[in-house]
View (cartoon, rainbow, N blue to C red):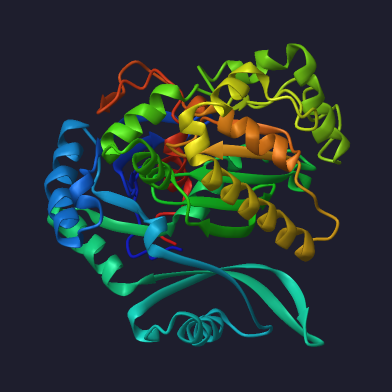
Length: 417
């Protein structure tokens, strides 16, 4: 989704309005892009579900982060929070222009969620032709958000004296953050399931190369794990989260692991992808994976998750959240099945986990084993050039940062779209 108003002559500031964190990122375009500044601040628990308290916190925090982070320019590209965005695959009549398609989508939304069409902002991405009741239709991904959510974002940016470069849906930004990996001939044949595990929900996106072809928001996230664990342990949410994170094993310790981890049995990762008609040995280096991807499972079909996963699987934490993990796995399987109905000749080649809640190796391995597809953890920061002069606020930037995929994707989105 994009709402653009002004063109910008310099790199815009990407602002990710997450449920639990506010993130700002600025990069200088290039090959590779150069990191300029990044800032992060946790949104207090008490402010997350209270619109007035949330707006008050953001009004205070955003200008301070802009100042302390040394961000340049006055143009901002922002995310529309996933937890406030309705995402739905729909079918519309073919041959209509964009405005007519939007009208069709609003009419369907009115029937599905009983909303006033005048109070929602709707954007869509075309997926392809489908047939419904012997009639040719167009499958689209509809992104809809309440207009007052957008207006609050605009009001906030105006208070910070920032020009509005555009608003984009999070699923589009996630896929954008890795689009630079799909430039070789044949890369469009790679089918990737991106799983963005966040605090309030999980976003599932399936892309053909760099083009998004499926998107769904799944109502399972880190806060649901914490709520479940708090009930089992009879403690508050903060204690439950601390206990859960203490037992989680990081799936990635650095971007360099992406290539080195394939020195042994993991080499079949590349063999599987090559077997899926994603290129030839001439245009894809044998025995390597992108530096932004760290394998979390040596073989998606082996059924072996390793000792870390099995130990954690028997813990009180694992037992408490297992029903939610199973729910999430079932939802991801349904996503894969829906995609396969749309594209009968396309199966998943790989899963890439991103999001602030994805630093749990056992969880990623469990998904890989259940779905049977090679699985990675994505580190979008891995491709950025560091000069030593970049500024960090709220973290030190020395570790893998899978939670920054939305922010980095926003940097790649057009500022005038």
